[in-house]
Length: 254
Image (cartoon, rainbow, N blue to C red; front, side, top):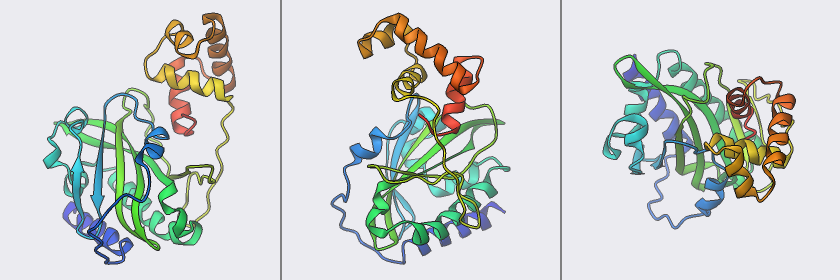
């Protein structure tokens, strides 16, 4: 079953690359723009994927902490083989939706300014899974043919308990975002109830900073931080900071 799924995945990626093989890559975007807009708190790793040959050109050492494998072992084959059985069909469906959605909604000139976000469970040991946030951006394209992608995979097991996931396409550099993309191409908008200051504080909380440390980083009084934290719980209708962080993560507010 998984061999058949792997074949279908490779077929999809080859189709979206348009069968084109552009080996010379000089970097169409600054990766810093993507990384500054990427959730990678805690264990994470990044990689470059070359679609025409369906191979990983580079994988960072962080994959060992996240998936318990060496960089040389990370591949599409590994991902397909180790996705949770309930999440594998979701992975395939989301990739199909993307292939249909991108040409119809996103101008090819802006393709490198969007990141794809969703999450799933990956096996890391016998009967042990981690929930991984999948964030990928197009590095190189020729019209709507995607040649190279850059991905960041982050372990969010400690932040997200629910099995619910959705496909989001997040616009960078002020471009509009598309949330919860459906099979028919419909989507919704996700508007954060938090202010910019509250979002910054919640992000720092997710990084493990306490109120005193956040006050020092933001150069504000600790009481101000505490007041913002109370406001965050009220606006998100949550009873704890962990619950608020999980809700913000689901809504792509942080």
